[in-house]
Length: 463
Ligand code: PHE
Image (tube, rainbow, N blue to C red; front, top):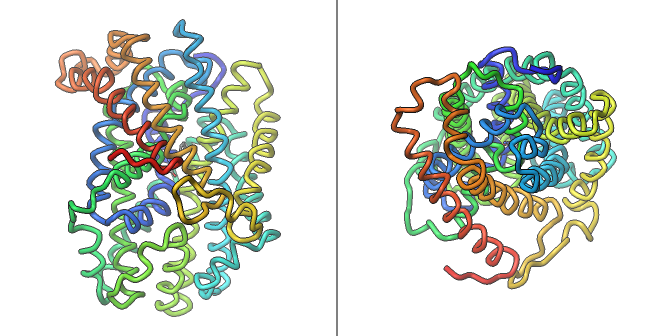
C-alpha cells in the first residue's frame, strides 16, 4: 500500500466502520424517529431497509474504496469513470452538511455530560434554554470539533482505529447496563409494548421514507464514508462478513437504545407515554430526570457515563465524516494532512453556526422554511437533515447501485468481494447481491427518492 496509511487489521476496519455507523443516529435519532413514526412498525421497516437496500450498497462502497485505495471522488477516476465522480462530490457535500449539524448536537451531548457531572439534573427541563445559549453551545461544539480533528490528525491506525477500538465495546456495556435497569422500573412493560408491538396500519409512506433515510444515515452510507474507509482496508480481508458485523452491531445498538428509552419514557410519564413523540429533545429531556431518581452519587455515575459514551459514539462518527473531505484533499491535491484536517474542521464548524442558532437563538433560523403544503415552519438544523440525510444519502445510494451494476460491472464487484473471501464466488449471497444492485436498489430507491422529494418539500403526496 502507498503511504496513505491503513487499518492494521480486520478488526481495526470493523471497529472504525461500526464506530462511524454507531452514533447519534442510533442513540439520539432512532428512538425519536420510532416515537414519532408509530413505534414497532417503524422498527420493522428500518431493519428491512438495512438488509434489503443498505447491505448491497455497503458492499459496493467498501469494494470501490478497497479496489482503488482512493478517496470518494478519486476512486471513480481510478476505475476509469471520471464523470461518475459526481457521486463522490455529492457525498462530499452531504458529509460537510451532516458534520455541520452533527457537531452541534454532539456539543449538546458533551454539554450534558458536563452538567450531569456537576449534579445538575434539572438540565433536562432546561433543555431548550440550554441549547439556545449561544456562548455555551459555541464552546461545546468548538471543543467537540477540536477533539474530532485531534483524532483525525493522528491518522488512520494511530488515531481513528485506536479510538474506536476502545469506545465501541465500552458503549455496548453501558447501554446494556442501562437497559437492564430500565426493565426494572414501573410501567416498563407499557414502554416495551409501545416499542415492540407493531400496528401495521401505522406504516404510511412517511414511515417508509423516514426509515429509509434513517437506515442510510445510521449506516453512514451514500456519501462516501465507506468508500474512504474501504480504501484503507487490506485485500486479504473479507468485506462481506465485515459488513454483516457492522450492520448487525448498528442495528443492535439502535435496538438496545430503544429497549432502554421507551421504559424510561413510560416511567417518567407514569405509563401515559406522553412526550414520546417530542422529537429531537427526547433523550435530552427524559434521561436526566431518570438519572436524578437514582440519587445524586449513583445518578452522576450512571448519567455521566451515559452522556460521556453518547459523546464517544458521536466522536467515532464525526471522525469518519471529517476523514471524507480530508482524504479527498490530501489524495487529489497533495495537501498536507495536518493542515488540511484543521482547516476543514474550522470551515465545517463555521458552516454549523446557523444550525446552532436554529433552536431558538435566532428567529430567522428557528423558523427557517415552511414547505409547500406545511402548516409549521421547519428549523434550519432539521432542514439540513431533510436535505442531507433523507434526500442526498438515498440519492447517493441510488447512483452507486447504478454505477456498480451497469458501469463498473458486477464481475468487478464480484472479483473485489472474492478477494479475502474465496467462498464468495459460489455462495448464495452473490446472486442476491446482483439482483439487489441491478434492480431492487435502483428501482425502489429511485421511486422512493422522487416521492420523498415531492411529498416532503412540495406537499404533493402521490401515495
Ligand atoms: N452513522 C452516523 C450515525 O448514525 C452518522 C454518519 C452519517 C456518519 C454519514 C458518517 C457518515 O450517527
